[in-house]
Length: 87
Image (cartoon, rainbow, N blue to C red; front, side):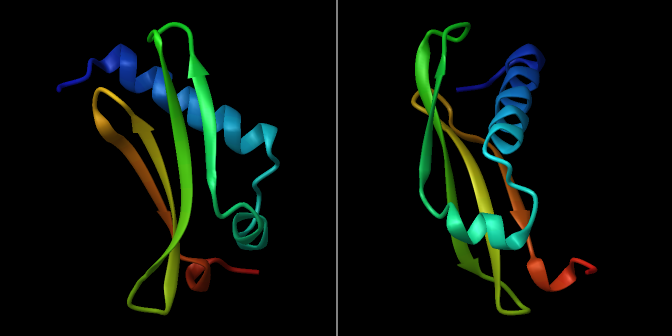
């Protein structure tokens, strides 16, 4: 199923809201949150969630934040490679 630009903006806002609400601000905070977070989206009329997982990468591993919807699957995904983050 295709999504509109309006829906994509809403998904990005929901993802950013979750990151801010749960104070995800470092690789360590991602490690502590390896699980799924439900998001109830009244505007879109269904329940959605964000899954945070650790997956292999060329450097070792990367964290993946997947925004999952029942109608579109994964319309947005963010990968963060902690070995590339300057400390």
